[in-house]
Length: 112
Image (cartoon, rainbow, N blue to C red; front, side, top):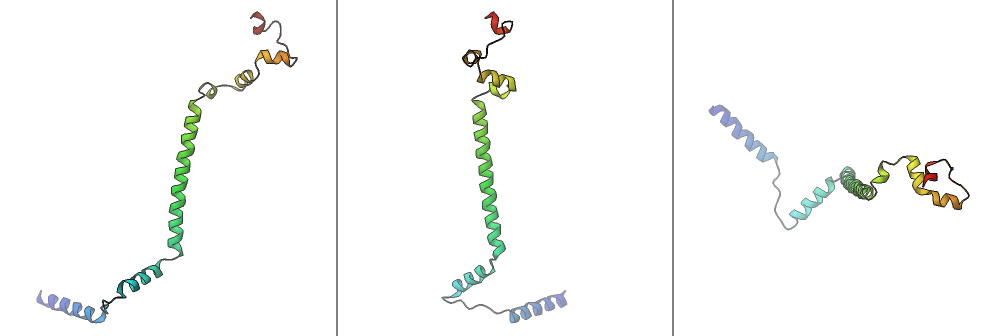
């Protein structure tokens, strides 16, 4: 066990001798930040832009979903209406007479 401790101590001493210890001075932090900023690459900027784009897309989807839900709650009858129901609502029989289109005398409107 002592043999391994001696080898470990020698390894630590060799490592300490091979690594340059930075000198703490007034320019230490500015130089450190310059080195950090130099490592930020185009990929970092693309990743940041992608995160912003995904967040904006999520907000837009939630906004459109909210508008769709609120818009549909005001007209529940039209949600299940058929094409003929929509046409009948758009053109009541009173307006058709003004256009020269008369209801059939044997139809359901004739009894009213």
